[in-house]
Image (cartoon, rainbow, N blue to C red; front, side):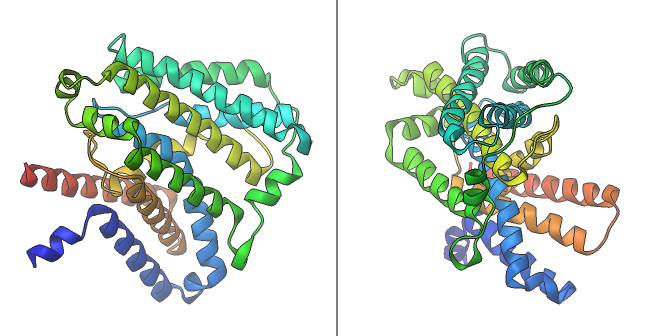
Length: 317
């Protein structure tokens, strides 16, 4: 029994939970288990999983790191691409390049504030969220003019192989890249090290401040990239486009087993967490519960999982 418990890691537990939730949904509503419904759930989970990629890195870095500027960065990234592309396929790559550079710049400011100025991550990223919202209002000026390119919608929104939406393949590619970064690069090893103990990492020769800055830069870049991907599906932008992803991105990371204190976790866990969050939301919608009840259940599930993971950590230590 003990051996089985050791093998069931938090990511595996989250994947198993997602399967159980899907089966439960089939009992509640037989249509819930249809292939088309399953693909729609996977599509929604893919968007959340992409948004949560940068959040995973930030939380892994420890120090109470949570990026509350994520939602604003997503929106700004989408608006910039929307305005530059303006429906032209030929402008997609230049717009994507600017989108990523913008995310890196915002992340660099967050990282410098956290690592150099010693501003608490939550305070720094919350303040940056306000700054980015102000920039959005200046750029938007009441209404954004532009449009998504047809090729963006073709790649991201339309089904490809076996009727699987293109965004799922984007998600899988991103997951592979992040796995390589975390498991096969010096940066990944140093990220886990500073997440466990920053002082010990510093004494072992790791440039802790630089790793933190790079982490927030990657977090910002992945957030604006999420805006690019989201625009490919929605084909339109609005001022609160990315706001609904900020807290669910944190929830997906935590449910996937990444320690909220940093130093332990994986993006595969975040992938599973995104599936769990999406399935919970879909089940609550299927039950036709009021929005207020959905929010209470959603928050309650997150609190319970936080308590469970917190207890696991204390038992291991």
